[in-house]
Length: 212
Image (tube, one colour):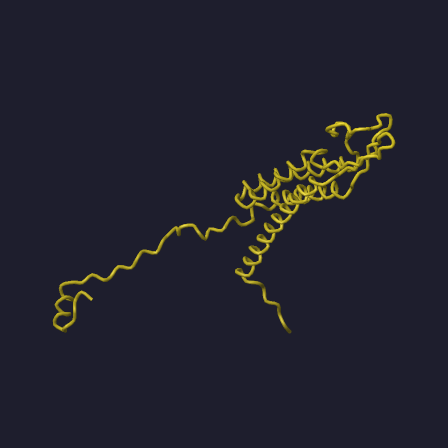
């Protein structure tokens, strides 16, 4: 009858350290991907606007980028990148604080992007200059481009998830490598043994150089 061997203390310690490294790596990956999604989505057109013009002029089609509709989206994306650096540079309670800020930024980003996706803002004030021949008697025709606001929502949720993980488990994650730190207790350099008078005369009697 075979019996299962219980894991030793070093094995359990290795598994715990590996799990903590994976947790930190996952949070960093989620934070970086969320920030990139937010910044990339903000640079794309979230609305397609058809401006009617008097005949024989054809209607004009304009695109409105996400950063014009929701300036908070790229700002919060940049905050996510800053939090990525903070997660790497801090430890314990400092990392928990960075995680709380990241969680708040992610939730705010997802909320702003979802609001634009559900009820897009008016675009009248976003048209910087009136188009020649615009027919003011007809309203603008606005179409939502759902892909990029949805990508910003996903980016915000990734940031929020990474922040929540840092709040809950960030104190246990490893810090930056200390491989470049000076050793706390350096090994003293070995000194050559002192030559006594007796050893000196013994060396001379045997024909050796006492200084070697």
